[in-house]
Amino acid sequence: MSQQNVDLILTGKYLLTLDAEENIIEHGGVAIAGHRIVETGPSREILEKYSGSETINEEHGLIMPGLVNTHTHAAMSCFRGFADDLPLMQWLQEYIFPVEARLTSEIVYHSTLLSLCEMIKSGTTSFCDMYLFAADVARATELSCMRAWIGEVLYDFPSPNYGELENGFTYTEDLFRQYSDNDLISVTVDPHAVYTCSPDLLKRLGQMAADKNALYVIHLSENQDEVDACKDRYGCTPVMHLENLGLLNERVVADHCVVITDDEIKLLADRGVKVAHCQESNMKLASGTAPVVKMLDAGITVGIGTDGSASNNDVDMFGEMNTVAKIHKVVRMDPTAMGAAQTLRAATSGGAKVLGADREIGSLEKGKKADLIVLDLNQPHLTPIYNPVSHLVYAARGSDVIHSVINGQMVMRDRHLTTLDEPAILDQMSRISEDIKKMRLA
Ligand SMILES: [Zn+2]
Image (cartoon, rainbow, N blue to C red; front, side):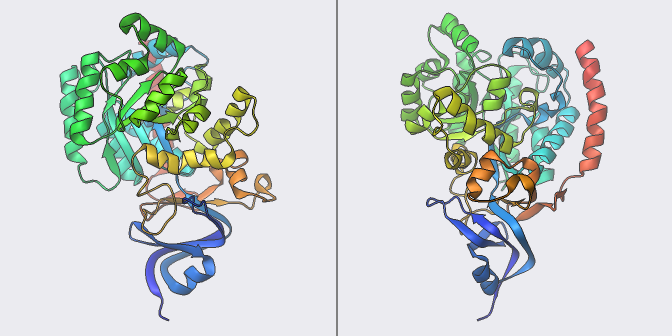
């Protein structure tokens, strides 16, 4: 039987498909042609059937879908360690907003590049980003060849990027035009939150998301202060505020949802709203813990997000999974809450579903886009192996990822980034951090 040529074959000790049956293939492999997975199966069969332009056999490797970070502000890597241990509103108003008011497109571009390096090196292949200067976030992302959903954040006050609000609409329209048929980048509509956006702005953006069939990404019910302020101003909670404006639907990605009632969970489930759970950020800002177990029980699709590096302070989704799997056990005093398999699903197929991309990514299956990572299991902290899924959530670190493939392209090989110049990016960031220190004092 003649072999079929493919571009890339990867084989390892385990192949986690994370498909509907959660099949784990021992000594498994994957054949990739172009952007897509041609087949997964036992390595022996894959190697018999296919010949790869490149073939990588990792005796101790674990192959799995790339992680999906459902909420981040990639460029906030420039604020890593800049202001810690402060309440949310003080943190935003005294530190983040004053410096953000002086941000430039070049700072955002280079800071995004830094996060892209970090994300790829810790196993993330897709992310959903809300920030200023989104065109520069997208420009950096294109260079990295990562998959992303990117939106320009809009709010009532003038933006350091586009100035008056009206220009924000034009800016977002331009983004949609520029990326209308990009294979890796999708544009989203991003009202910042109910406390920074008027009802009119929230509704106009809701219409825009409907017209463009785009995701509507918003910080929602992040903490008790937000809920109290919303009650004072509008006489209802943030979730009910959006409901009253007719804005809860299946396009909404609600970031955080920490302070919500059981009735609101049912409402979000009924409306098909998706949730990005950002536990480490919620812990660092002492916002609380989102009732994720209740959300999942109610049928809400939940993904995991790191939020920006200013409130985390990293974008390592392995660290995030570890935290998520443990915190809900403590909060509920139930060691069976958020098991390893459930947590891993939220970080892969769940995240893909949050972004409306589960038909293309989130699992390793024939015909899906080839977004996958390989971890080296031959390490003290990953030995012995009784259950690889347990290791991924409770013992692995982002630095265990050795290869990363996005859309069929190897973006990291043996921990070396192939699309980004890591040393130059780190160098540039040290210079930018000096400028940021001066901005805070200005
Ligand atoms: Zn956020």
